[in-house]
Image 1: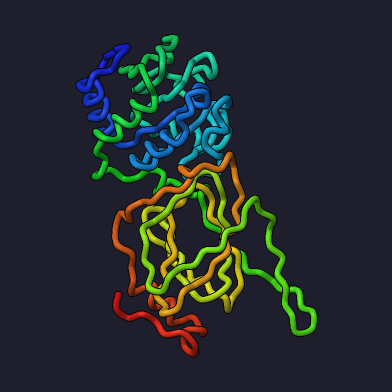
Image 2: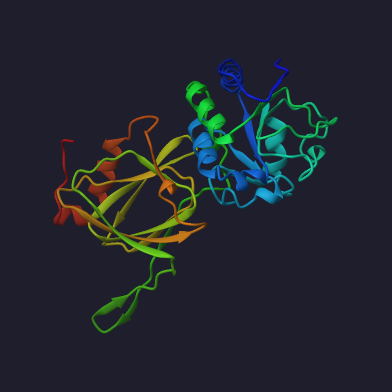
Length: 316
């Protein structure tokens, strides 16, 4: 096992840390309060998303990643069972910007035997319950970037995809109209921003992920298939203007819409922000495996509107 502490990490030391992260089965990230001052939350999210590692926060850092983000397991003192067992099954805890003074390590490492990789701008107090096997001290953003370039977890399961039973769930809510004569009106939940999106005919895009906002999609014209990556597999849902509904997509959930019609589709997105708007709050994610286009076509064929009005693209 490593036992290295160095103020200015060399490429060799980053290689060793990356090899360690690549080798373990169930790593966990614990973030501390200094990540807020360092302004590295997007680097941290990119690091966790790319490597498929769930995140737990101290109370002082609980706003760094929204609590309902797919990556988030909550705060370290939460009574929820999956918080406690998160440390039980971890074989490596990567602490980022953590200091033992903000949250005593015995709360999450009562036996003092969890392997720890400490990443921060400075060393922290070491005691019986917190004894990092390796420290990477320096510019945290650069350290995370350096690790992302080196770590290879292609043969490891993405924990935040497979352990998300009670977080990051898509909600599909049918909308009930209020009728007045020949008119029907629908009441939508209030939002911070409303965006109209035009999805071109035949569009099959990469997955997209947002981190500090909740999207609520409403199809105004046309029919699409919503593809969501959850629990290690794709889930497919037909969205159509013939069946009004609101689809709520929380932070951190990889998703896309597939339009196999010969007509474009118009979608309204009612956005709720969970922090300041930032262009980095939207990222593209290459699908880990191909979409089941045949299944998407089958769903579209079942939609009544396609039987009578809109042809389907048979060749992509």
